[in-house]
Image (cartoon, rainbow, N blue to C red):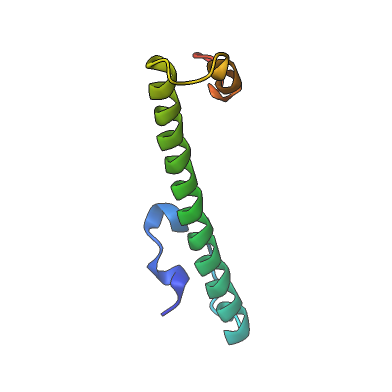
Length: 84
């Protein structure tokens, strides 16, 4: 069984593996899938860590412990305006 065979239907949509694919190519595909999954886990972990740190910054600024102007350095990280 290949890593590609274990993907959930939503993740596997559009992935078509020809029946005559060589074993070496299947092994390469399996390696790519494993690497993509690791990158995904790291990305999710990084996003969660950014959120945790932003919450901590907000607490520090709200309690007056933070430096003046601290919020201005976070302004660029607010994301796109609502409705865009």
